[in-house]
Image 1 (cartoon, rainbow, N blue to C red):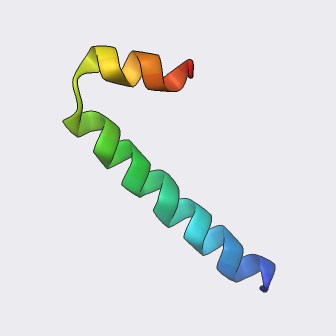
Image 2: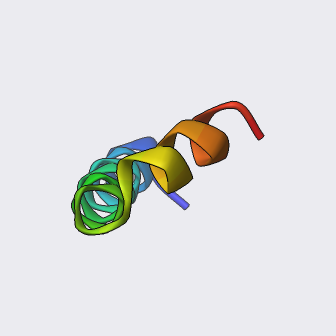
Length: 35
């Protein structure tokens, strides 16, 4: 897998994760970060 493609997926994953976390309860987010 080319690095460029990997970076793209990484960025998309990051964005996806952030939007998921923002939908969740702040305490869940807190726990998740320190899991």
